[in-house]
Length: 447
Length: 123
Image (tube, rainbow over all chains, first blue to last red; front, side, top):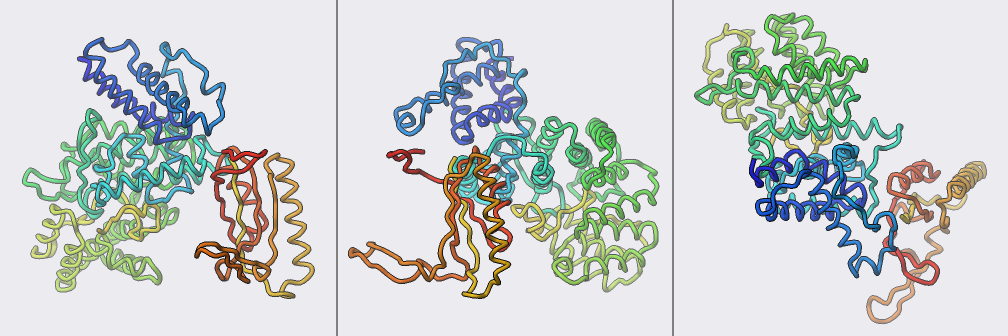
């Protein structure tokens, strides 16, 4: 491996870790980023000439920390900040063993999802600091101009410093709520890239040298990082499993001609077995913890979808538990669809209309929720109510932003009845509630 | 870090609160202030008179102007200030949660930018 590739490799594996280490000591995310960027730049300049150091991560950390220390010692800083003996003392970091230092990425993620930070910025901030995506790339995923996203990120980082948001694992009483925010943010990262019904397909290309580009790169990475730094949290494991299972099927949901393939019609040979196996590992670990949660249930449902010949009653039970545990428009629509598969389209339609036509926000949102309209269209068609089905298909098509899926729905309108059950609604996981208040307001599932 | 806990709530009209309610609030604030002091984070605690006791001073238009009444007449008003010194925002938020005023009003937690301590401006 040449020096440049080594620098890239160090960037890939180390960015979030090194940034978290640097930021925890100072609480200043922006300064830590500048220092780290400086260290990477120095690496790219000096490694090809002088050779790659034996311990690239340690080298980068040392250079970045020296850089931070330069800032603290500057005349300007000295006028306003008292000398901190421990912080400012010369340290011999050349022999530093980065692997021996605790991984502070969980702290970094908890900071990104702190309740004092605008929830809309939780996910972008994590993508930016933990995985190193640029404001431009994140802006594209959130359908926001790059400069606007950059402004939000800068404002959030300034807030972290000025308000004194701590880089630490919160107290036991606060941790569950904060972990939930982290999980939501990672799920949000997945939702913006999830295929179909959740907005335009996102083309987050990986940052230079970071992982392979692709639509499923970043959420999978974020979820894996989270599962690694919080291995004892069953919901973190469940979320990782969920994201991996969907990533595993990403290749099979569009055929060679670019047409959308519903789950029932997908060729399991096109699924990524390696990712599925990894997801099952996470699920087993989550199960061992003995605390059931929403993401574990969603992952279990997806795992069942990946199992040919699975018992539909089991699937229905899982959907029922999920809808009771974490009711949302998405979970309701999925429950109605599965009910139709086991108890007939009439039962499914009754349930769907009950769940989406109810009073309040969910009822109003039901009409604008693409999966609800797509499932309703399918059920009407299976009941032989052709005219109503056609108009529902038209409504669903109008709400679909994914070109492949829109094309698929268009073909359904003209097709004769009596066709096999059609999972026209996206096969990938539950949908976040389309109401932007439900967790990741930055994401516009129905945009 | 120094934080100001700014208590905002609707001002009761004179005589609106009965004696028992007032006494109970005073007991709660007493316990709260003592807890802050015992934790070593309390710098100062001031509960303010109602806004109609306020006088506003400005030099903004060149000449001094002294006016009867608050800066802005709103339904809820600044009612008191606790100045505390805690390691970080989470600690300050924890104390804000325990503030009796949070039960009937809003506590704004504002980091202090700079403070005049021992004869000099400091951070």
